[in-house]
Length: 542
Image 1 (cartoon, rainbow, N blue to C red):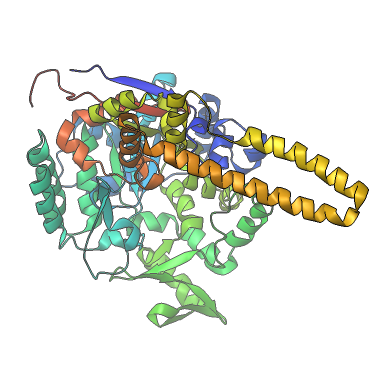
Image 2: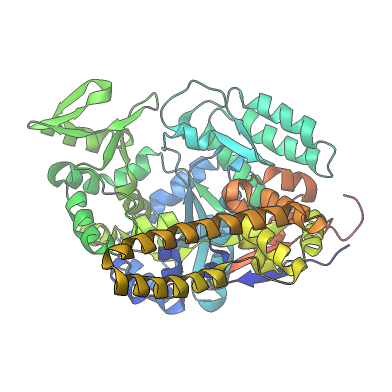
């Protein structure tokens, strides 16, 4: 068995993350006005102090979780975490994600593993407290185009359904056909049958996507003590009613966001500007439509509904399950119902949370420590073989394919095919020609400049032709580079943003989850390249 190795790279070396991400992990001062606590132990301590002054209704949270886990055989770790939520010395460490079918992209798994790792690390650092990892499910998201497909080995597999509305409430009908396909494709692998059984248990023994996702995540992480929370719940939303009423009456959130964006947009890409009312109406059928002002009242135009102000406010108190926060208020809802101190998210998530600090302050809800989720590149033995053939250092894997091929041709030839040195010579020669033309007839100078431009353009075209011809001569190294880039970076992006976890589970089994957990970082910002051996088991076979 090949020994597993881990390599860590600075995020900036991967050339795959936004300016905001790189600035945040490097503690740039430009970002400081947009978040509350630093992502370090001092920040965690400050978040705990702030959280202890906020009146969480822990009893409601614990009761809802017990109801949602009814019928589950909880592990000892889960039972302990559930019981501990009643104590004001217990805090949660949370990641949130929509219920992508079959877990969607790999980073779905990495986010949850990071929550587990950080909760464990904080227990070591603050033994007087307890920390519960939570996966908070964004089951009210209605974007089926995003959530209803996944990729395996570069191929998109989509769920064919005509259902609409909140994806979490959708029936799982039709997903059995996809499971049948996966069985035919991966049953020969060591854990292929186990993977299929796990998927059937989740998607064919539950009526809807949110319950299926809960069970699938539980099967993968139950041994860690992870708790899954489905926030589409009337009792939880009742806790959020005061903020819903305030949004309806004042529309308080958007002006605060727009004020923040005046400074934020000078340095970073804006994620969302919000709306005058940042709430949806979520009816019994699962349709999720915008609530808008209409004269002295409100309307849900897509559903043909109209309410007076008094009717809408009464509905918020009596039927809180009919209200759903959009991206501007979703985090405020999350932090209202959970005793949370840390939120783990990707670059885009952290960006929109940083637009919302003033909204949290106005709502009187504690703002958590923002932690950039862990990122991995998983390299199987075939990938490692190609890397050795290509002679690439790990950091070089993140260059684009064309750059790597050009570098390889230059290495083999022992000289650069860049013609920049000739371009510099052109510059000097045409400068002298312009001086000469100017002495004889100044009107000739633009003509000389045009000749210079054409000459440089021709030089660039020649350079590309030389490089292209040289690349055609590449043999093993070139083919290895192409295979690496097209399998590890599908579509030119990071593996974790497209490929699905299930084929890897079919090969490596549950020990893969444990290896990801073991090599997940808590607060240290770094990109992890994990070299996987042929098997993760200590004994041959399964």
